[in-house]
Image 1: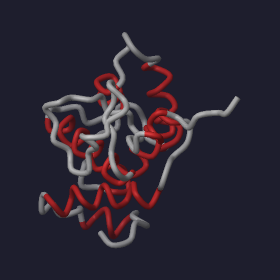
Image 2 (image 1 turned 90 degrees about the vertical axis):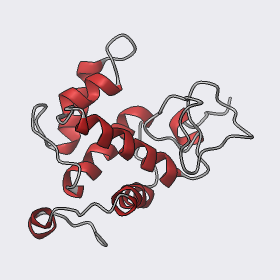
Image 3 (image 1 turned 45 degrees about the horizontal axis):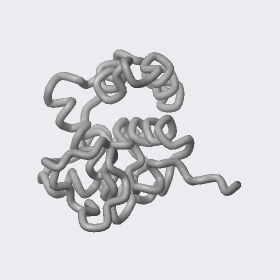
Length: 158
C-alpha cells in the first residue's frame, strides 16, 4: 500500500486552511479543485502567503500570542488544541502568552514553520515559507521592524 503525502502538502496548503468560496486567494486552484474541504494552491508559497494573511488578520483582532492564535486556528472541538499549543511553543522557543508582532520575521517564520509541522508532520518547502511572508509584507507595504533585523533575524532580503 502506497503511503500518501499529508493533505497540506498535497494541497500546497501547509496550514490546512479550510475552503471558502468567498476567499479569492492568489495562487488558488479553482478549476481543477480536488479537495472539497480545504484550499488548494498551485504552489506552496501561495499556501504560506494565505496563512500569513490569516495570521495577520488574527493579530489585528487581538489574537497575538501562540495560545490565542492556536485556540482560534485549531479549536478544541476539532483538535487537541493544548497539544498543538505545547508543540508550537516547544518548536519556536516562545511562551504561550508571549506577544508576537507580525512585522518580526524572526517570530513569524518560526511560528508558521511550527504550525506547518503540527499540520503536516514536517515543514514543507522552507524557501516558500520565506517567499510567502515576503509577499505579504511587500504587497501591504509593511516595513519589517529594524530592531528585529538588527537584533535577531537571520532572514535574508527583508
